[in-house]
Image (cartoon, rainbow, N blue to C red; front, side):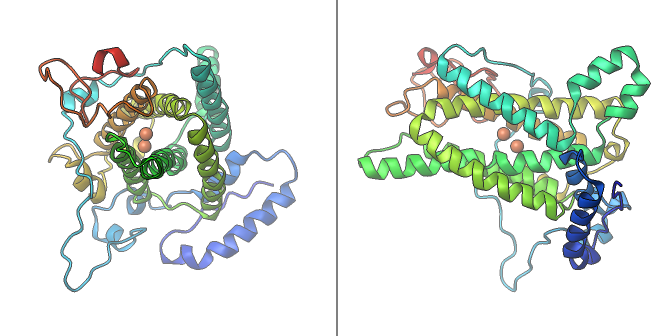
Length: 360
Ligand SMILES: [Fe+2]
Ligand SMILES: [Fe+2]
């Protein structure tokens, strides 16, 4: 038996969450072996039966139901972002491309293999079967649509999980470099800030998606478990080989760009109707400084994809540098400022990273 009851949202959800979780486990037991994690996660990340409440926070009712409403205090008017987001032009965001850096060294190949394994696990957990869908689509488009179509809910679930783990590497790397700098009593040459800023940016992605969906207990459990393993694994990996970890994150971000590009493509093709008129939540409008007339879900996906492309470039670039001595090229000033060089915005894009000889 498959338990498909839509999870209630709003105030009732919190009261029923524990009972719902136990009920789901019972359903799982009753259904026996063969249930894929896809079902489990989808079941608990159902979006609202009345989509406007959870897909948008522009209406009064949706503000009331916000997942984590801003706490009003007597004296504080506003708490702006600690790291203001760089300005992206619309053209630059549209010009972001899917790219892959060839694995050249053994360390690169280890990093790429690790990403492939993770990607396989995430695809399994979130029911994302793009390759199979493409293959079946060539033979029978209608069957492919019925069997593999990604819905707004599935994409949202994938995004929440992806972003919840994406915020970890920068924080771990930044912390290790911070401790390393103090231990060696030497400067870090500007890497720490960029790494922490990256994890902050990823967390903003997560908070934005959380304004549009409410993860159930099972997703929280998955995130908790993933974080426990993921954070510790990254900690030891960064101690052993920071270069490999940066390359690994570069490859991971390549996947993130692919994922958001597919969402944009599906949205443009009319396959995600609930997102067509959806507005970005206020937290996103404030953080990215989204201009009037460019505050839709599509615009939001463009901003997030552009961020991922930046993470891809930054980490591939850091993976090319001397991990101890080289300055962070993204916060450095250059002797010849006219020549293209790494920047925080999208002006000079290098999807596969800057080579050391070009910038150091
Ligand atoms: Fe992200
Ligand atoms: Fe990212």
